[in-house]
Image 1 (cartoon, one colour):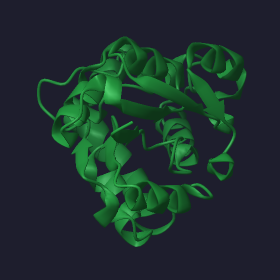
Image 2 (cartoon, rainbow, N blue to C red):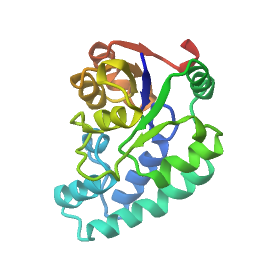
Image 3 (cartoon, rainbow, N blue to C red):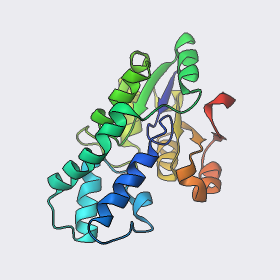
Length: 210
């Protein structure tokens, strides 16, 4: 193992609650409940693609830009002030760095969400590369593009990388790139945890196990 690539939301960051609330508020003002398959559908999409999907799927009258602005206004304050890394994540990151292992982040999220958290938690300087939802020509996490891009930026071949992911689509995509994948439990994916575990090369309930 030459490099470790982390997903962000739900994997190393305890942040899924933010988007649960954003979704509830967004649909509530439109007289709707959050569709049952909505979270699963957009969980691996970039911010922009998620807005496009939402507008087209549910005939939202606002523009894609207006939808993103509405989401931003709800979520940014939480990321800037309240979102924390999951327990023992910092400890594990420190140990990886001590061993000389390259560390990357591959997330569908945008930098304005994850960078404030990494800075506030004191781990920003430990990351060697980032690949995120703002990268052009990178498809959703239904495809392995973002993991491959992150590995390239880390100077590692896919087979030299271990990926930590919490959603089934991410697990399958990273594995299709030839990477080792460890599933990370998050309560938001409780209903699919058995499926996620079965698809991954291994799993952890939290980072204290490492």
